[in-house]
Amino acid sequence: MEKITETAYAKINLGLDVLGTRPDGYHEVCMVMQSVSLADTVMLEPHEGLCVVTGKDDLPGDDTNLAWKAAMLMASRFGQKPDVKITLDKRIFMAAGLAGGSSDAAAVLRGLNRLWQLGLSVAELEALAAEIGSDVPFCIAGGTQLSEGRGTDLTVLPSPEETVIVLAKPKIAVSTAWVYREFDALANPQHPDVKALTAALQKGNAKLPLPGMGNALEGVTCAKYPAVDAIKQKMLAAGADYALMSGSGPTVFAIAKDTQTAEKILKTLAADDLETAIAHTVQRSVI
Image (cartoon, helix red, strand yellow):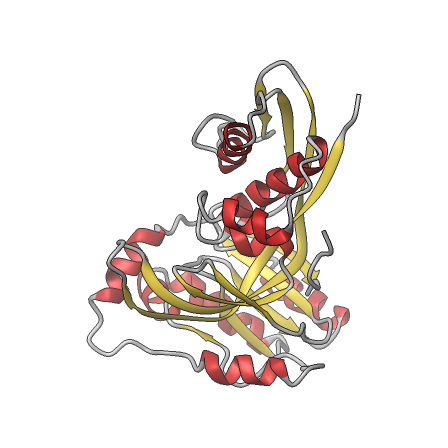
């Protein structure tokens, strides 16, 4: 019996700007997304019927799970019975702004492409992924990419030099929909210079942090959840070269010059009730 294993990498946003709302109800965004080594492991194997095992009491393995949706989409699109067991070994923080669910869904698309020997290209998988969620196409191959439109228009960028990243998530729940509504109501929203960030990456062999990094949503989330900004300040005080919220939060990532500095940052955060990890940037996957 064949078993397929896929690695589902988390993502951070090196730059995130919101340009307005779209006629389809989504927001127009301009983001640079970056894969990091914190990852879930997704295992797929033949099974009678569809079964998604999450190992988490607070993460259902039903039709609300993006991994389930990915499997059903592949089965219906290519005339397959969804006879597969999907086991998620979760390490990415949940509801964290790290695209954990989206990355799991992308891993299911890649895994079923292999299990069912469909021979789909990256572009074909990304088109399917866009039907599941805005972050899912990026997670097909990951690496460093410019994400535009509603988040599904992707341009591959040169990856920066491998960088040590510290991730910290406070135990609070942030509603992405609420963050975007609050952002829409701002009189003078902040806009990072994602164009400058993209240009710096396109030169090749870039070293993080880079000009233009920033997150337009950070001010909204920090205003309601001061713990997010407190994490940032502690990271910077402990020697981080840069710190920024990822996505709509609440996870904050720090750029550290080396693992020793990363461990010092974690030690500074040890007294707080946080989920933490040390990771590094990851280049685009070859499929």
